[in-house]
Image (tube, rainbow, N blue to C red):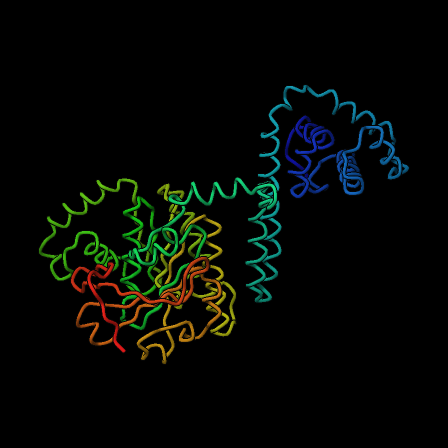
Length: 433
């Protein structure tokens, strides 16, 4: 199927292709010979590509004609190609000054063709129950782009790299609710990182995630909270208490005070935004979250800085049929991939195994079902508490993993069971033997 463009557009593409190396490099992975309507354009395109692949320079018109001669048939004449090149070279050059227009035109068409091909292939794959391959074909089509981020050139980018690491530090770092942890991490974890909190059932995983969300809001961030277990209203109620400092059991009778304090909070942090979305347990995966992000971006102009997933084991992997330990590692990998894709930070939670649920200190050896998930994490902490500590409103945070800072240490925090606020422990703390 050829371009549905007028002849002058096709000729403009051919002209830029053979005369502008930067243009050539941006479109070469997007364009196929069959996209051109005329045989002469197809053969010229193939000739330019073949010559560049071999010699790493663009051919001039004389070289193109010589190469075309080797592909002529009894029904074609070399004069047809000479005439076509003359047409191409005599185009109004002012129309070619807007290279971006041609690049955008080609990119849109290439994306459309790739999607159509993926859909066509997927029909047969669905009949064969090869759903994982369907996802691969669609994802591959969606990656069609002329984006030229080629990565970091290590030896030539030293200065720029350290400028980014220092000057942008306050922008890219996301503080945790605990100063003890922030100090060891130069302010906190960064964008594109995956962070995990581990605790037993009913021991504060979700409450920690709410506190982490509130901390991000106080930094004027946009937070997307995805609940896979509790309703949106229940999660919102927890945010109510942490932000307003009104105990959970007092919220209903203090609605006016709640609204006033939330208004004060929003006034203090005007750029902060919070979206809470509930998905059925075990039904959502990384693609579900990806679709949600795109929808709220389109409808609400909302792009999250922080995504909270409550919690990892209640997601499912995009690939079916994996063993549980493989599935959890794959989910962690997919979540970190989302962070990289959307340039945000991901916080999630996980449960320990049976030994960990009975332990007074959860380490990485007590993770439920899969040790592999912690390998993907950039930061992993656990919440620990004895009965005596519960009575005192105290917890211990254990740093299981921190990719770029101090690890394997504990520090105490305070837990207010009324307002659900977690914060640094003040005063002397004597850890139990």
